[in-house]
Length: 202
Image 1 (cartoon, helix red, strand yellow):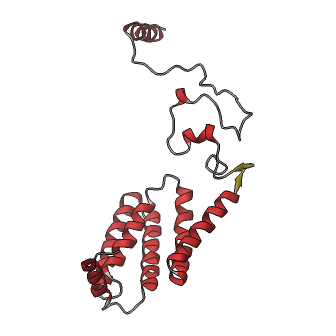
Image 2 (image 1 turned 45 degrees about the vertical axis):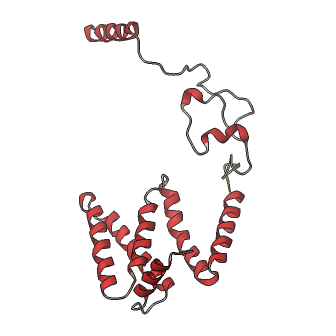
Image 3 (image 1 turned 90 degrees about the vertical axis):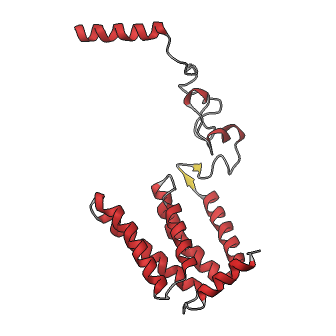
């Protein structure tokens, strides 16, 4: 499925590399983790610059020395950058740790190992509970009424009921009397200015 020209270029890059792809990936991942931890412990104005410059210099030096291939540097760099796109910091740390498990199982069993690892991860997540609530709710178990806030957060005025697994079924939220926001009118602006003037006088 890979284009022939691209496959030839990747194979030519790997001719001078003495290590298998798994060893390359592990070395680069450990290097990036060390740079990331060093950047966290450096002063804030310098930390991010140290991480970026260190990654560029070490990656270029490793390619020129023939230790890793350029394709592996690109893949590991994209993985490290994508890790910062995770909204939750705790989830990003978990993803950083579980990445090594997926690398080992992929190197051992190939694509079947990756699929097996994804299945095991999903089974583990669906078996977890947080304060008695399933971790993957409302996706597992599927709760149709609560799917609105699972992927896209609805505005507060559109949220009429709390999650069924958290509160009693049909419990209204404090937003039940909240109307959809509208632009301010001249009367509301005048009343606001009058209240400000009264507070300044007092």
